Image 1: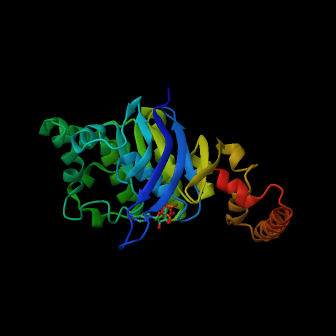
Image 2: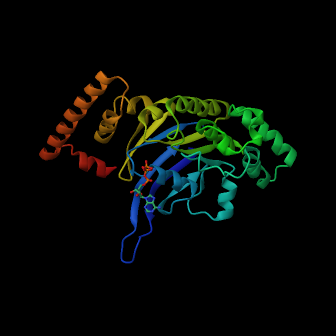
Image 3: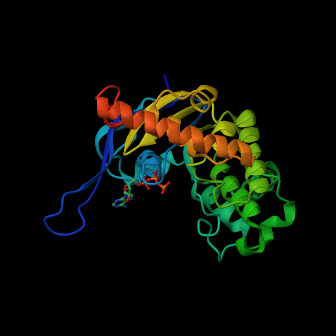
Length: 292
Ligand SMILES: Nc1ncnc2c1ncn2[C@@H]1O[C@H](COP(=O)(O)OP(=O)(O)OP(=O)(O)O)[C@@H](O)[C@H]1O
């Protein structure tokens, strides 16, 4: 049995304005994540990646379909059950600048969820020291405010907070997108190291294929509220089957200008070939996207 099962999930955001229809952001999405697995969720802006992560967290309205965690239905559960679930399912958001309370010290940020869970103050203080060590922050970091840290360090605080109650799944929503490249690599390595030690699973939302290649066991590709391709990370990011993934891959920048020019040319050729196919009615990109 998978740790997380997302089955035919539809998410509709309420209509904005009288007489307007609700907006359907997910059109029946299914995805499983095993214990200890990282599934990278990629797709262009607006494809529905964050919405799927929020549906798992109970932050987006699941209009139809079901989300199960460890065999239990967790979509549309009440607040008390959702609070209990937060022992097992946690989140790290993109922006470490806004996801941490600026008025609290790191010690308070990390202690709070432990005290709420009924952990004694002495045990919580010990746990905070261990957490700082786990995310490679100095022991004296506890007495400082979030603004006294760099972006990468702040994201480490957010990761420590997510880890405080030993979750089995962390929804990571673009957790390295706000960081510079060297910090991105370090924080990604930290995620991998933590997984190796704890066996936590990640639903890793990102628009960046190089990030997804680095961290994921499996990749799911989203476009227009549908998953169009899933498979082992190595396959999907090197020999994608779906035309949308092929285009996404060729659109991803590479550092070498000669290779970049080659990719641009490949992308134009691919687009022309796909447009020709569409005109002939065979293997239509639009039709294959719509099938999900
Ligand atoms: N609260 C909301 N109310 C109405 N529509 C929303 C809401 N949140 C997201 N949407 C819409 O749902 C669609 C999917 O958005 P979502 O944020 O899930 O995409 P995404 O792939 O994560 O994009 P990005 O990479 O830019 O964050 C978009 O068209 C967006 O405008």
